[in-house]
Image (cartoon, rainbow, N blue to C red; front, side, top):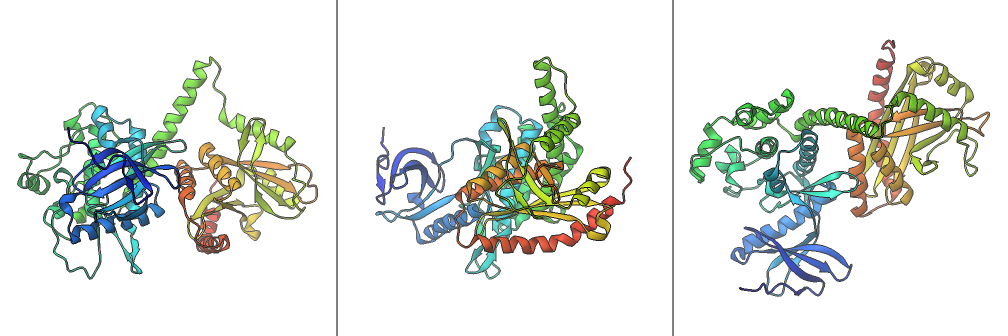
Length: 514
């Protein structure tokens, strides 16, 4: 048996190659140790059969592309270094991922709907980032993956997100530059290629959307929507151009899916690009509400099951929230290191072994009393704006609008910044993402010692997912400028958003409450 001469090799005096973990058309991937940082990484070499100047350029382009994209999305494999070894073989270094490919997952069993929705959304977020483009010589260039298939999707365990999706192999991605005069040629995997890809046309995001449609159909059924007469270019050309996709019912009569999901997948499989969703944003717009709906149903069922297992009655969440709010009012006191003034700041609220995210606010007593007396008419707006560059920072936005107080004064804006390079900022975003709620603690300016009123605010599941993603992204994000610059950028985004929010709050406050 031939041995791999790379095993045990010290690459460029830094990367100790330990074992071969994968190989494909583009090259080989090894698990390795970074002896400088003491971390486990992966090293990918270009195949010897592809060693020509054109392929070297393409390989280096792949490394640069992945490096830039991974700075924007946690759903794309992160590249940290690249170069050429002593034998003039190009290589690049990337994060070492332990998990399983989507191909392995769906070959064993069908995915439960909530799991499918979570994975599909994460795949879309990664593709959306690529389609939005990267800067190449100061020009924004969209990136089309061109080879979306189950084996290029890795699912890794993550303590915050549960399952974290990573899109692999942007090796055949192509920069869509307007001045590109190169002749297009077919690159991809036949069963997942779009009709226009097989014709060698210039591709746009809608080609990836077609491949995504095939992938989603396979994730839901374990079967392919199209079947070619022969596994050849001609056979798949005919299938993609002329054969209608099979229906979910014909593949699996017992499968029960939301009609909106079936329609979405079939729209992605349209032969003509103009008939498909025109962007990943359109797909996310359809997927996110479905995920929120089915995730919420699963959580409720889980809680009921836990309650029955403990042989205790199911408590009313609204009653629990009210009791908790009253308890907070009794126990919370204004921090001694804060001035008695109309200020807003984030601070974790500890209750024994439990901790919760909270905004601490000091307001005039009359305003707090109005919010208490007319609480049925309180309208709460919550949002989170994020900037990873030049410094990872979140603007945590809350607005309270009450028709009896705010008509003349406008909403009460509560704004906090969370620096994701500090332990306090990371802890707060972790609590927000995991618990899906936070408290607003109101203290009266005239009598500041004790909390006068507390408001519970829930966070939408989609926002919780974003918070978790930002928490992970910030860990590897590199600070390239001042934190104050990020605050200025976020403030500018807030000013753009503010008029629309005010309009929505004023409109919703006119809705009758029964």
